[in-house]
Image (cartoon, rainbow, N blue to C red; front, side):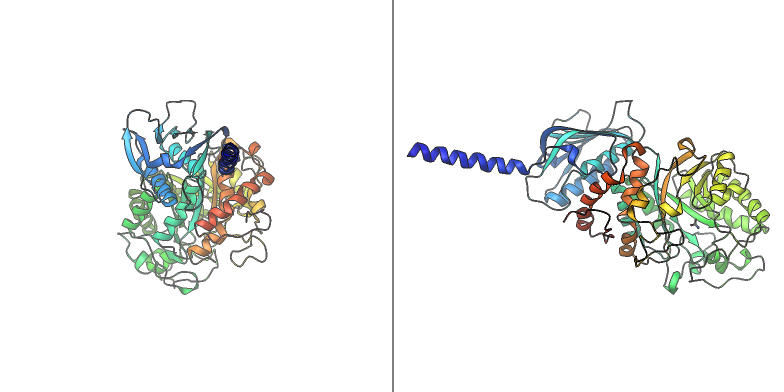
Length: 512
Ligand code: ACM
């Protein structure tokens, strides 16, 4: 009797243990990573997140501490326990370890993530690689606070990006987004290993950056937005705060001063920038192509010199974007003369130039990048003149295009962009004559005529943004919509846990 009951207890215990262990996922290759890594191999075990109470950072390596802090904060959110960060000059055997790799085979921005039973180590080719490896590790964790124990499958991820530049643009001119909202946008990019935020900080409807030598730009030009709202602007201190917040997430901010067109806010602030010497009215509509700086006045170039000088001084990244699009009321020769002069000004202040594809009509100095948005001829002309290309085809990559005719936000002048259409293209084959060697990277712009707050931004950005991140990161031979959509489906819960108001496309088999 006694023997049988002991045996039956044992059987019950074994089956309980099995049912517990069945819930533990030990196959790392089943994790829905976005962007898809170069290689994932599973080793069949599990790492208990309780080991992650300590994050070790390689002593003396620059730029790794913010990554450790971001990982620590996330683990604390998920487990409720504090995580300590220490520097070390030896490889630990337990916890999390973040270091620059001594493997010189790793490509720039690449990393290796090795998850073993007691240690998760992230070794990057550089600090950026470490941050991206950390993001991969975070995607192995539950999407929201969970009971202990939390297990992570063991294995190795080896990874590096297809393109060095993977960006998104935010138009803060048509509608203004405050510092906290821009930080949220930066967080979205960081989750998916994007590394550039292009800020469109001036346009007809608003001038959004403090320029100390031309104060009326923000006193007058920053005071409204589309629809007549109160607008706003960033002080230089606030802009620096954004630059630092982005840099901690390995994201470079590229500011755009759009010119000579898209300048009504400046033309309303300073009468002398107009050819007729008369200040324009502030503009709160959504038309384009009606404004121009006066290209043959010396004061125009003094103005640009001051703006670029002040902006360059607070922008550590190498680029300034000079706009150049849709200058429909600037005569062609005046446009070319203007863009030539502005390039010299930007160069004088030590920065490289990016401009929309129209700037290819100017002479183009060395190291210019042409941002393809609409015109293939302009873009190929730019390549002929030695420019690099940034791929932002409006019909594929504009985040403000509606998903379909029922989308309650967005525009459709470049067509509708359902999630599959946004994903299913290859930057290196989209435009005849433009190949991978010509391409700096990819950027998905969000124009803000129809979006007024971060919730509305979220609806247009998600779920398309992860797709643009993957196009920039993952080799085209490794990408297919049918496989991608099953990974994206698993990110729906992640969006929900983060409070992201995403578009629940019927093309994606969302997990309930
Ligand atoms: C643009 O969409 N006007 C660059």
